[in-house]
Image (cartoon, rainbow, N blue to C red; front, top):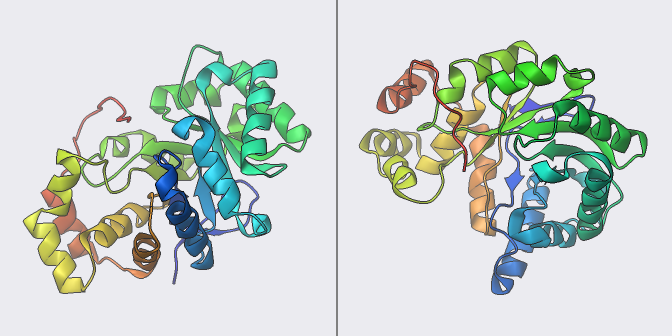
Length: 283
């Protein structure tokens, strides 16, 4: 059975969505990106995550093209810069995102990372955007445990629907306190870069002998194995980027992979958690 996640009062969604970081940066790849997102919707990956930051808004334009005529099928997420996260600036930023996305509302609007604006000001404008019908619910991204405690003690802060953070098998720091706390609050966690970002760390995951052996034994790819590991955690959704239809199909198939406790233990032995509090990983 496909694992599902619920944000606030919204409908249930598959635990793998679609990320769009680095989309919209190359005009020659635009149609491939649009087609990949459309294929993801066809496969049931209805949550699409983007941000005003990504390619200076061009990623939102790619998403807008992909969801044209299909808005009701999609759970649409975008993010606001921290310096835009209060007052009229937040309203203007949200409206600009909506224009690029060619829609009149967002299902979920996130503070992209913690800035200098007090949490109360951000909560206040998020509530205002809900009242005006611009967004359905709001959340945060890249906030660590202490930040979440401050938010939770802010008037209206418990309306936060999610925390989107970096999380993958080789970056398990959130398991010390942030993830257990979010699970205790029944707050979904959105894992970005669930396959690790490009570079040595990603290569170390994809080429690890134990992971390759397990993937071969199960008849899946290492990437699918890593996605299955992320979403086996209670209340965690993965939002990998997929720039091609083939990658989207691979991601979607990971929803059906079941990991035994022995397989999970094998993976976690290869990439153990820190065992102590560490700074929140961000990229």
